[in-house]
Image (cartoon, rainbow, N blue to C red):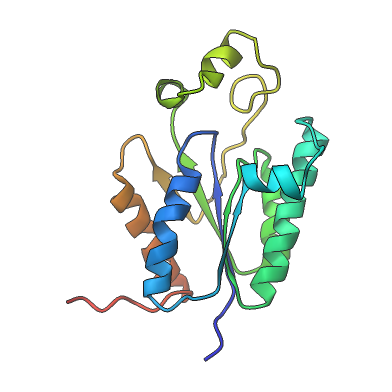
Length: 182
């Protein structure tokens, strides 16, 4: 049977756990028979597909639309896409959702104080002090999804709990066969 393509779009502030969640989900999808998987990580895409873009609203929108276009093509060709990108603006995320079609939005939620505590590079602290301009969530907006398919709170939930929520939603939507309980 041909694998159905779909995109899981992880959105949230820097350091919230988007990539960690994506990395944890990938092998579980493979165990459940989803063999064609591509990961589109915002940081990696920015160094290749979106090299040269800055952090203006226009450049951020262009970056997300590029990731969305790749996700759309892969999804249409039967691939499961795990896209991890801050994607700060709601209207662009909604446009990507419309274009991709088989799209599951996962809001990876975490508070600024917790993100600042976790941040080994000290970027949040620098942004709060005004040393870094256009930092999403501090000096540049992050528009939380109004109706995400799933919200995971990485400050309050263990990784396994967040993973289970995503897998359950994929089952509910018919993108993943229901797990047989042992």
